[in-house]
Amino acid sequence: MTSIHHPPPLRPEFDALDPGLLEAVVAGEVRLSVAQGLDLLERAPLHTLGRWADARARTIHGDRIRTYIIDRNINYTNVCTAKCTFCAFRRDADDHDAYTLDYDTLFQKIRELSDIGGTQILMQGGMNPALPLDWYLELLRGIKERFPHIHVHAFSPPEFIEFVHFFNPPGDTLADKLRWVMVRLKDAGLDSIPGGGGEIFSHPVRRKIGLGKCDAEAWLTVMCVAHELGMFTSATMMFGHIEGRADRIHHMELVRQWQDKALTEFPGAGHYKAFISWPFQRENTPLGRLREWGHIEEELAPDAVFPGDAVATLAGDGDAKSHPEFGRRLRMAGATEYLRTQAVSRLMLDNIYSIGASWVTMGPHIGQVALGFGATDMGSVMMEENVVSAAGTTYCLNEPVICRLIREAGFIPAQRDNVYDLLKVHHGPNSPDLLVDDWSKHRAKKLHVQTEAKPAPVELSVTAGAVS
Image (cartoon, rainbow, N blue to C red; front, side):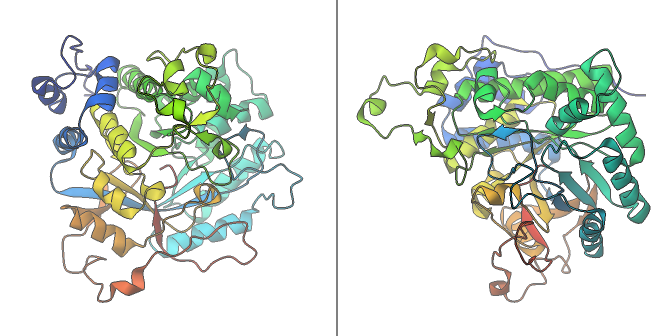
């Protein structure tokens, strides 16, 4: 019998740093309020955040095992109607390097994944109006006919919103239209939906950076329909650009609220399995050309307020006119800010099972440190990555190295599947990392990039750049 979901109570009267409050949060007995979450993000010492987030992670996952997955990130097209200012990947249809992969190429990529023991493809693309619904249905059927053992984790919420626009399905509401499309894709072979395109849910920020991309309500509605249909999904957040810190907490709160909805209204069906956040990468992007905050004297004054913080509210309804420089200044997030934000996400999201260490933007050793700041999953062992690579940052590791990073952080590495069931626990002498004699042969290599003239050799690599 499916148990009824009862969210923990809020205790807003307590100071966010009260040890008794945090002990109750770790035990799952109390839920942080948004004000307490923001206070922790802004005021808690770094080591304090790490200690409490790690304690919460251990309550949920235990002290022994931390995971990764073997999949392949397939970007089937880079043609996209959106013009997101943070993206260096998208192309117009008539650009010289625009592409849409044919079925044979896609099947070959999946075959290479299957040959090395991969279990999942993460398939996302630009929002290409030239592709009809039948193109997707035939592709999914072809994948399942050839590779029935491969989990198809595909099509982020912004893609689904564009499917509604492109295919004009019947229905009185957005949810009805989404359901019509999603049922057909699911019947053809779609297994689950990744959390791409989450960015930041706050309306003023999203309107500035996500031109042509769906709003928060639409994004969350896509996932709600997926959950109703029994599919598991993930949620994501990209921070460290023009947003205020309150925007990050508002984003987490919306994920938490809609997870409560899924667990309450669809017990035993689908819900969010993971939350992954990462800092914006500026290289080769229009957004990255903005001037960074703090580079002129008046911005260094004690009373100077970053424009994003001036606009941000915990309700996500800030006025973009609250600061004349809003949307014109960046506040990039380094390793410390990344770890702080991830730790708060583990403490805030009491109803989310896994927090992913998205270390592709920070490097493998910060990813390893993230395992002490609430993360319990190191992302995917992958064979290619295109979107984050286009923005200038790609860290690439193979399976032995990812296992070594997990083990040297004090845990046992384990390969998982999409729903976080363990496939292989590497505790014996035949573990990938324990078989290595010469680590000099396991240095980082460049990932395959789809638009290169000559494809790079297939190899098993690790990155947290893609959303699983």
